[in-house]
Length: 156
Image (cartoon, rainbow, N blue to C red; front, side, top):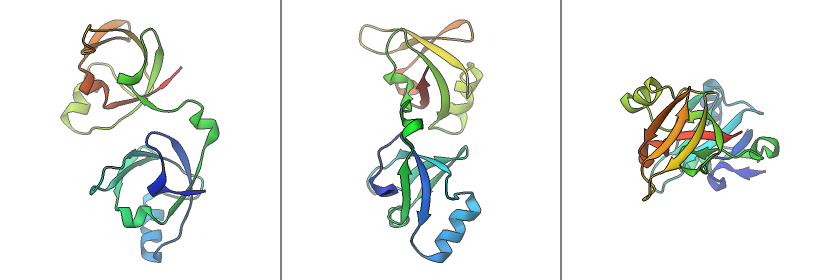
């Protein structure tokens, strides 16, 4: 068991307990963070809230609260670690799991056919690594590396 504050990004963990103030525990419970819930740390930048994903919802958690969240590693789920689309090798297949962006850019990516659960194949990278060409829903699509880094996938 470890503290959320010490977890690695893009790995699946299971929420075990909250050992802090009762009011914080009650708030997390009301958000749906119950023992056994899968939780993924998406961002742990210094001087910014921890961004976590659970039950399809992303929330920001202050580091003083993350200190008291106890999790255990989900070995079965981490055998297929989540990666960004930009980390997938040429010729590999992946399935879109989630996005690390909201708003207009997420809508634009979804309008291009990149929705949760869709299968994609990385066709090639440009000579300097940007853009990336992928096959999605039977057509070829080129994405900037920056856009590809906003898409969480698992290799299949």
